Amino acid sequence: MSVARQVVVEADGGSRGNPGPAGYGAVVIDPATGEPLAEAAEYIGVATNNVAEYRGLIAGLTAAKALFPDAGEALRVHVRMDSKLVVEQMSGRWKIKHPDMKPLAARAAAILPPSSVTYEWIPRAQNKHADRLANEAMDAGRDGRQWEASASTAALDAPSARTPSPVQGPPGDQAAGAAKARAALAAARGAAAPAADALFALPEETAESGGEPTDAHPAPQQPAGTPQTGWGAAPDLGAPATLVLLRHGETALTPEKRFSGSGGTDPELSAVGLGQAERAAGHFAALGTVQEIVSSPLRRCRETAAAVAARLGLDVRIDESLRETDFGAWEGLTFGEVRERYGDDLTAWLASPDTAPTGGGESFAQVAERVAAARDRLVARYAGRTVLLVTHVTPIKTFVRLALGAPPEALFRMELSAASISTVAYYGDGNASVRLLNDTSHLR
Image 1: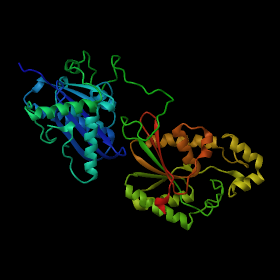
Image 2 (image 1 turned 60 degrees about the vertical axis):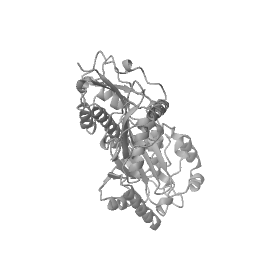
Image 3 (image 1 turned 90 degrees about the horizontal axis):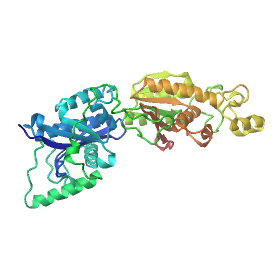
Image 4 (image 1 turned 135 degrees about the vertical axis):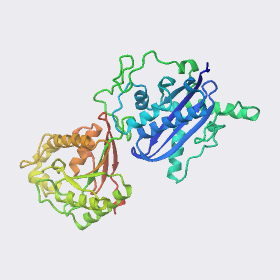
């Protein structure tokens, strides 16, 4: 009867942009000594965090199997990852819904018998070895080279990722090196490894693969009404719907700071604005991330969107909900002129989002309602994709305000230059992350 061989696999993956340049890292560890037996890492091109994490898992399991090819079902692998999504899906407690994840999960599950593998979620601070390897792989890809095992103490005595092999008992000087490796590994994980018996204890009940979370292992729920902020706040929720918000280029009214909404003259882009639109087109062509373009129906936005679409080879879809506020009788006037002619109305408008401009204009509350409806449609339509929205000051401020959970008065505390860029990413749980780029020097 074969004696069970036990190893720990720690794996991670990352994407600089989600999706963006991505890589994974994995390390196979002897749980009794803390010694790294093999490392694996690779730059995989443009991918999401989740794809990179699954690729790290696959690499780690493959390396563990290659280390002990004759162990068969006697091999026990305990996987430790800081990806809640991968751990819960591979444990069978969460459904795998995303089409990109299903073949990766199936590939990982086929490497070893399911009864041989257990999974544990760990905080990122305890997964530093695999995280380091993933970042090394992404750095290598950025520099146009392949990843190679580093000479750091955390990687002492670790064989190449592509030809993993067992590390023999280290005599003499190798013993000191292995001791340093164990110490570095323990420090990197931030905590002592659990006892081997605890690591490899199989659960008494295992949820059926792909099933709903069981009562014994309930899936954690995101508290309602507590949106997270910060770019990439939800790395385990798949690729977000990314709304890139581009304000149109200048018109003749822009430098004079005149009210120019959907109820005015619908001005065209000025010569300066046309130049801004062309430079914005070059900017997005260089990035290569925009997959769809949606524009306000107003002329200045359609002209800006057309310049970008021509460079990217995309069509432009018009969405009426992206139009600017109707400023009523204030259209074409400066703020000072409105104060002089409609002082009381202006004061009331500044004090309440429910107050409309003079002459039957549109209140900010009404704008927020249609922008929120547009947001919901766009997020559903473009889940996992990046869409460029060419629109106006008030809709862009409203997208940002709603994403941040800021009060209506926040609209008066933002400034958006012509042709400026803001980005809001919406994840599967409804949380949003905001990125602002109001410096338009790249468009001059």
